[in-house]
Length: 492
Image (tube, rainbow, N blue to C red; front, side):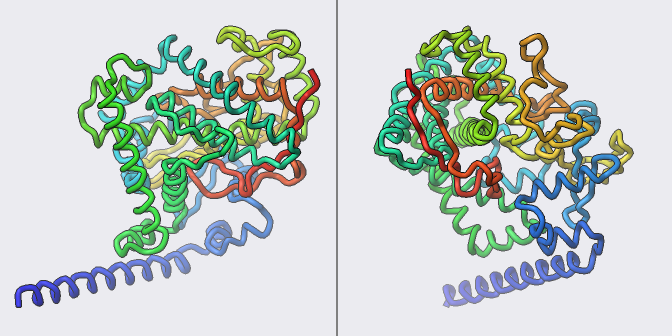
């Protein structure tokens, strides 16, 4: 009898929960339909923008170019989007305390990232930031990372491309770069080798689960309202059911990594996880750190390399200039050996930065205003609303980069042949201010090593260089359909 009563009460509870969620969603959708009739909101809601633009980021760029201030509002999303460097400095530096990641963002990625550094504010962020800064800033850890990257290139990446060059097969370089960077971040951060790049091309369960979880988590941010994905999560339906299963697998595998490292010992290891384990005893916290490192070090590097080689396919003069620099600094037909010689590759460094100006690995970043504020361009921001600075659009704004803003022109980063940094609030590809990316030097080092090694040995020709990249919605820029290429060995 008691079990029947419990069953009836549970049924009533879930029925009311479902009805409440359904009517909340219905009310919200009606509010969207009739709440804002402006051209931008209607184009967004109806996806009318897709008739003229392949990517949502290109439509935003178009709107931001037309705006006198370089700032727009998407009212139905309660989102202020800007490509104005003065606004970016205000958000990331001047009023940093007023623009945290915020609870709405933490909710979107909370199931995946937990309390990892990319999903928290305040003391938790400060602690992880200080720990990561201490470790990533040391010379020994950078040399360790350099040796790992060089070994992965020599023992796996080059043999893999050589085998495709001999057979004349088409190769998806985006997939290769994702596998390469996944191997590297796992070895560097956790001391494990998933072996994604050996010649049989195995698929890591962790990589697959992480891809699924990242993609579906990002899709939450694209929903017209959090009510939509929260309702699906409550009822365990559709994409939210898939996300739950993917995150469960990611968490299980992350736990295995931690347990394996604890059994093997960590006091004498160089990987980042071992260094963190010396100060952190909470396994849940360590798991969140593991997943955050995966997000930071895997997809961003792969995205940066993918767009770089696509741009090179359209710019033979840039490729030739890089080859000339490699001959001059390293020597003809020689391999990159030392960490110091890599620092002298100023033109290659400039070409990578220029590539990320046009195709940043993270296309935009959002904060949530705590209190009402006014941006430097006069835009009013209401407390509790979302504020987004759009790196992709910023790299394509004439008012920011000049009339040649759409040209792939590494020379804009050089003075007397030396690489010179631009204002980070004009180029927030690695964020800026207090949240500037701690791993940017190692990420650029990894990309330089890969680019130098591959350009020395291979002609890499994109199968369809005319087709501009079309992006899949995600936390980082991923090209739909990958980057099919044909690889040829260079004559020595």
